[in-house]
Length: 195
Image (cartoon, rainbow, N blue to C red; front, side, top):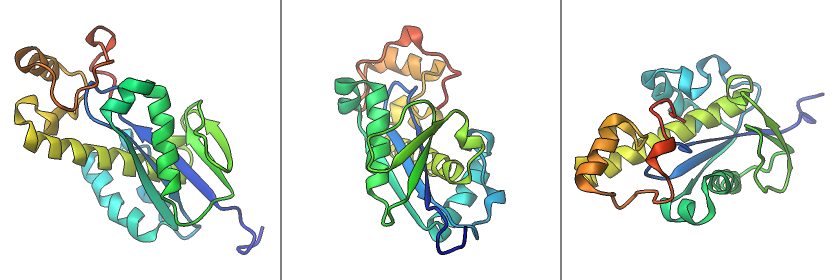
């Protein structure tokens, strides 16, 4: 393929399926061949410092990017899987360039108007999905840090709403926060759920 006919590929990923509080967040990213892919990886494999160093590069050099959010009330209403796919759809709709196709990390595809391929571990294999993983993770983490300013007793700046021991103890002491996912039950959650 020539540069003129090269396929425009969008990467999609989400974070925040496991937390007991806060939004689920997704990102869509289109990269070109000049992007410095060596700065990318699955967001979970990068240090916080490396993730935040990559963000301005993605914002500045990506062909297009978008971020989508679905909030706790909607998560409770439609369930977390549907909410995750909806967040990806919202992220896709923010793109200022329409791709030829999309690759999404995982086994479920959002309802978007292009061919969408699902791929397990795409966030550690496909650069555009890696970039989406980084944007989604950093955007959600920053949002949870801001919620910690409003609700400091819950410690959201530390655990980002995941079901850590400290978060569970805060819930037991203070009750649910205004950003709680009421449909989520503690008994099936563990500290390992960090996506």
